[in-house]
Length: 431
Image 1 (cartoon, rainbow, N blue to C red):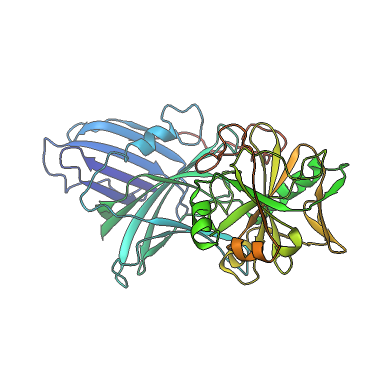
Image 2 (image 1 turned 120 degrees about the horizontal axis):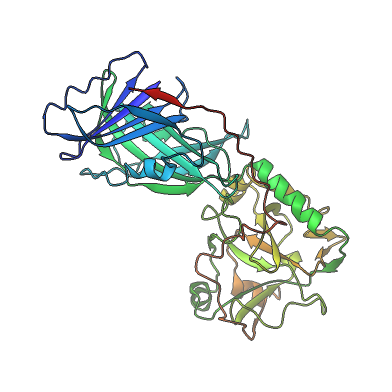
């Protein structure tokens, strides 16, 4: 199958043609003999969205149709790179651009991930619309020579478009065109800006991260957890709020850790450290994250909550494990259940309870961080003797980096193995 994209570089009009190899490539609507056209051709198997071959002809005069060679699209050293191809559409500007959000959903029964492009709910519903999506994936989680590009036509009566089926842990560029169909021709009426997202870790990916983290602490002992503690600067919004209302309100989890983590910016919580000073077995006397500290004995925070393993990562020095505590049935719990690994609070290697006392690993190069996904009633718990406040000296800047620090993708300890890349296609030539 061939998809031919014709752009009039003067009027900026764009049309997609869905053709069989035996079809006539007729672009009769471009009747202006002086029009300069940009012709982009994608070759793909019928019924499949993955692009196998491609070619571009710039500044094409209608009277001068040169021979075009479809280049093997997936070859690293091809004359036409994926960036060049996708860039052909980047400058397309039409009035009244459309906008989509990206939802990465999980089918509770099958456990499979489903990515959906969703328009604003205020948009008109129950009217048939046709869209063409162009998807490009490039990711450091795969072999460096690997990239894929997809093109697909979708028709919908709702505000949602199903994304093409993509693997986990991929960096994705996408562009969506609203089109008006007429036979095998689809005229572009509106378009989105080029946007990006990362496909989330699958549950299998999280299992593998959990196994890697478990292997990292083999042979290490355990230490008691007298407190779960949290530091923030006195000027941090949550601390200002505590001083006004007595409540510390949960907020969006940032991008700290694995770039493909499904909890980044998708659940709310408050981070606590479960790791103590490896020598004193007490909370660190100073903090990189601020001078205002609250300390809560774990027996006042953990019982009755679900515990999940979410992440294993490093920031070039120490390694970290991210655990999530959720109230059963809460929004965060419903979100985490199909995506993360649920841990037995009485039997796991990172945070466990034994006869009423809580413990964590004593591995010196691993820090266990716990995302508590409820608000903390600081003043009420303090009056009841369940929470303690103190001022601590700070290290460094004394505050965390805005939106967190991404995972060190070059670490051989905490990164998942890259998927292999296989070249399968050959070159073809068309006129």
